[in-house]
Length: 178
Image (cartoon, rainbow, N blue to C red; front, side, top):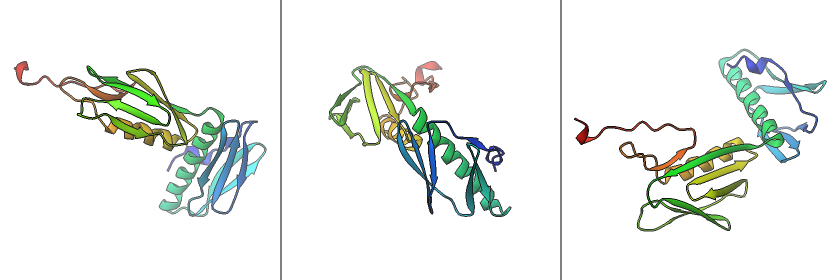
């Protein structure tokens, strides 16, 4: 279990938190997010801080307390600042173009790959070889970037493909390296 979940989480001035039966509603300047309440977990709001409590010391309840704390912290961060991930495209002729609500990727296949962008996230293509995914929900941003990366993962011999901007791809030597 996370030791962080035992500490109170400060609520920024711009954020309103409302505890409902099965979920928590977090309102902020960037929008509204909902997080589920795991089994055996309760919330307590006092003096601009929120604490996550568990009903007993079972291992599953400790895990749920850590989960609830992380979900709440990510939701607060999302409605205040948002999340951003960048993808880098490497390879000759590989490029990305945004047309309306679709992302069109040329990745060396016989046909271009079309990806429908969900409403929860925003995808920008400032250059042909860079894709920036932003949004309020950390899980949605990570899922969209993983789905885009899945179309052409980085190849280990030449390094071609779609990678995260901070990802380091270690290249193999190949047959001629002997």
